[in-house]
Length: 225
Ligand SMILES: N[C@@H](CCC(=O)N[C@@H](CS)C(=O)NCC(=O)O)C(=O)O
Image (cartoon, rainbow, N blue to C red; front, side, top):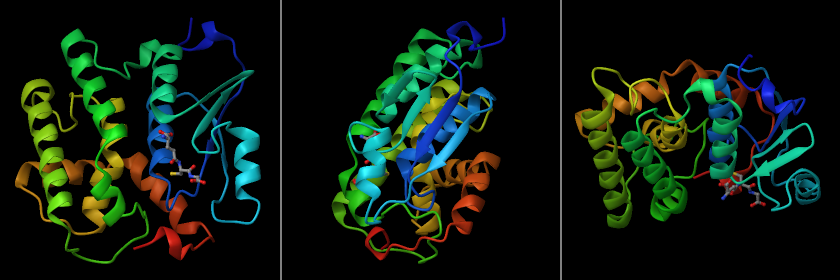
């Protein structure tokens, strides 16, 4: 039976916010793309008069992304990750090895819950070309911690491959937006972190998302640096 069909849930639709600004939407979109399964997408621009109402019609939290699979609705990025991994088990979205999988879940949870200085000082902006940015000591410490996460994963689980656990997984989807920030804001990185940042920036799916972001008509200064 093809991957996912046992769920029999009908159409998959991802509700995203602006591709230019929504790091959380990108994560869910990358996760779905990793399955290779066709899915629909609806982009709801934030910062418009009716955005709140339209988002709430599709996501009870009032935040995006949200994923509809037939009658089923799932929101919050980590819940979406777990649902997709469960619905498409053959796609290998989490590493197969138990220890690697526990590690991947830990770093995804850490990314999901943390790194407030990076979020505040380097807002996600797929179209940014502001050049090198000065950041606070708090952001520097978070950048160092991310470098440590990437180094540790690659050393322990990646072998010669370029993603965190060898083949691309949900962990790469989770860390992609921060690597994109490092690229677009010209953050100085050690060679290993710079190499992983390049891996993410040149990931064809990331470039596909960027091309769509470049075509979006909405420019919202409140979301930009
Ligand atoms: N914890 C949520 C965060 C989602 C989130 O903050 N989404 C932003 C877009 S990137 C949003 O919907 N913002 C709408 C608003 O704040 O009104 C998740 O993991 O999915």
